[in-house]
Each structure stands twice: as C-alpha cells, then as structure tokens.
Image (cartoon, rainbow, N blue to C red; front, side):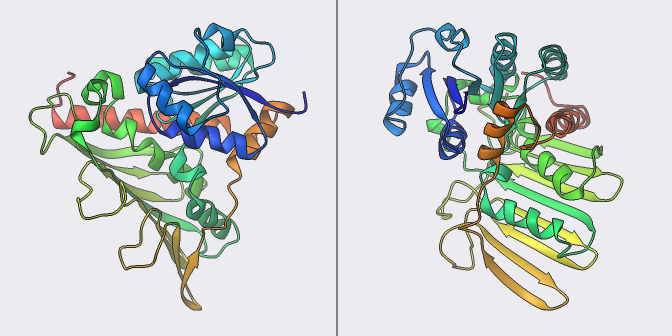
Amino acid sequence: MSKLRFGVIAVNHDHIFGQCEALLEAGAEMAGFFAEEDDLAAHFAARMPMARRVDDKRRLLEDPTVQLIVTAAIPGDRAGIAIEAMRHGKDAMTDKPGVTSFEQLAEVMAVQKETGRIFSICYSEHFRQRSTVKAGELVKAGAIGRVINIVGLGPHRLRNHHRPDWFFSRNRYGGVICDIASHQCAQYLFFSGDETAEVLSATVRNVANPDRPGFQDVGDFHLRSAHATGYHRVDWFTPDGLPTWGDGRLFIAGTEGTIELRKYVDIAGRPGGDHLFLVDKAGMKHIDCSETPLPYGPALVADVLNRTETAMPQARCYEAMRLALTAQKLAEETSGWPHV
C-alpha cells in the first residue's frame, strides 16, 4: 500500500486529536473509530467529521487494510489495546503514558519483539510542539555545546469538576509522574543523547485535594545519566489567571549556551506559543518556532509503510516509560503513598 490507513480505538483523552492530526497531516487516512461512550464519540466526530464510528473494535482490528491502531484510552487500558493491535498484525501508537506498570511494560516489550510490530508513544510535549523540535535542531547543530543539564516543568490545570472518576484513581491514571512526566523523561533522553538514566530521588504528594485520596497533585524527581543531570516537576496547580491549560517549560544548559522553551504561553507578553530563547557567546535571541515543521507524523507513517525506525527509537520509547515508572515507584515509597 502507498497510503497508510489507521483506526482509532478509545478516545478518552483529548490528546487523541493531536495524534490523529499528526497522521492526517502526513497524508494518512482514518478508516474509522471505536468508542464505547456516546458522549465521547460525539465529541470526537464533531472534531473529526471524516471519522466513521464502528460498533465493535474488531472491525478495525480485523480489517486487513488497517495498518496502525491509535489509542488515547484511559491510561491503564492503553497497553492492553496496543498489545491487542500488535497481535492482530497492526502497529500501535498510544497517548502517553503508554503503560502504567512494570508488568504492562514487560508485556508490551515481549509482544512487540514477538510480532515485529511498532509500538510508539506520542509524547506530545515533544512531537507536537514546534519549539521542542526546533530546540532539538539547535542542540544537534551544536548551538549550545554539549548538553549537561535539563530541567522540565509541566504544570497543568486541574478543572476538577470536568474530570471523570478514573482521572482520580491511582491505578487507572498511573500516578502523576508516570502520567504527566513521561513527557519529561522522553525529552531528557532525547536532549542528553543518553540511552539510559538513573533516578536519584523522587516525591509525590496530594497537597490540596484531600477529598480525592487517590489523586497526586504534585511530583518531582532528579535524573542522572552518562553526560547530564536533570530535574523535573509536574503538578496540577496552573493559576486561574493563565490563559492556557498549563505553562510547560524546558531549560537546556550546555557547555556553550542555554535554551529556554516557553511552549504554550510567554508570560512576558509575546502572543502565541512555541517561544524559544537562545543564549550563546554571540548574545541573546528569541526565536518564534510557530512555523517549524513537525516530523513525527510523517516519520511514523514512513516507518509503518517501510518498516523503518525513524520517528523514535523503540528502545528510547521503552526507556522513557521505565524511567517514569521507576521515579513513580521511588516517589511513592519515599513519600509513604498508599496505593488507592
């Protein structure tokens, strides 16, 4: 086939739109979608009018023209859907986190090796953010020398009354580090250039939501690898006055310069998102990244069609989740967190 056809199974998180858009922008075709929930199906169909709803996920899993299954299910269910897809001879792309336990990670790795399929996690803070892509280009070109430290901040807006019950259940969402900070783990590996890292310290807490005992509203952790160190914090404390859902930032320090990303908003007043600030021996520079191309979608489409590995190394995809799970486990052990 010269054109990729993909099916969507489960649309429980709005990240599904970015996942689908990455493929559609690359020329792929949506074969259909399955959602158990009528309200979520209506919401998805309104944003994706080309989408055809099917009444059984097997219509997509057993369709020989569908090469890729895409899911943004409840986090605890994503690995199972990906495993089912791979066992049906399909590649799989999940929203982050792709897994919520070490057991799921081990099974995904075993099935992917057994079937030879692709298991890809769409880490949207990298793959769907033009400023992150631009930073990668600059680092690769040597703009700041060798990277020695990475700081990632991921505050989110809670909107408590708009969230489903599973969102507050530890075993369904995986914990705040596993859920949100898998983004930061993937970016740490990418920018450090290291294949693995170790978790030095980690904490999680429920600071301001005592009525939700299974919910972790803040977490942080410290990484070290062969060439760099890093600190990462994620939380659900975006102030009401911020005009976006969160203020994701990334700070990259190199031996010859620094890069700061303000991915979604510049609180200093510049309009829009995807702002990059570069400081090097020549001075200080603001770079508008709003026109930077996003390579993940085209690369994944090419990987599926050509059986290549260009969108993201499979090993890094796994290692990012291993780091997130390791930090989550250490944080809960350190903090005395009850598994609710």
